[in-house]
Amino acid sequence: MSGMAIPGLHLTQIGRDNFLLEPSRSLDISIGDELVVAILQRLQQAKAGTLYYDLAELPLIEPRYYRWLNMLARACRAVNVAMVCIRMQPTAAFALSRYMEGVPDFAMGQEVTQ
Image (cartoon, rainbow, N blue to C red; front, side):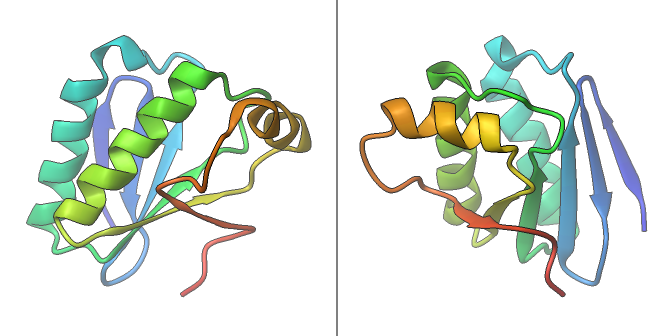
């Protein structure tokens, strides 16, 4: 199991083809394209099958962050990696429900499933 150093993110291999991405509050999505490329490179190198995106540290998900999550999910799908957002806080889910107009591009789950 290895980690990857990306400012604001901790990406760790947690199984043969599963990865856990843990963002910190310092994550700068204004460089979202660069983050997506760096994440995808690591996932492709490891022949990843699933990316679990841990939302436990995010009390709110505003529209810009939601768009970034969808972009990352679409990019993952393009390289045949499923993206599952896990551990969303109730406050984040409520905020998201207020402006979400369709089904997100990522799956949702409670925890990592192996």
